[in-house]
Length: 80
Image (spheres, rainbow, N blue to C red):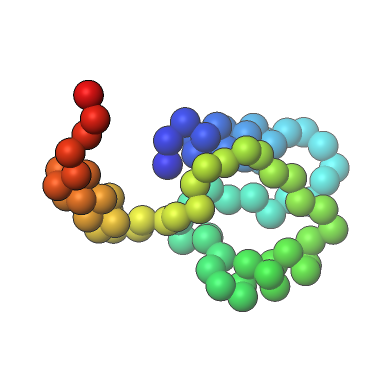
């Protein structure tokens, strides 16, 4: 997920391990991803949400999207 995806992961890991009294529900595991309406239901249970910059809004769990994009880029001539 690129540089911003790595940054977001690092922020989550540091915040998860911070020594404070906040109750946190933070995960960087693919199995914990919310999709569709589940994301909104999760947000409604939260009292606050922290965020980071990110350019990644696409999850490619099996790498098939990446493979397709690589094939498309091969077919498109790149400007010099």
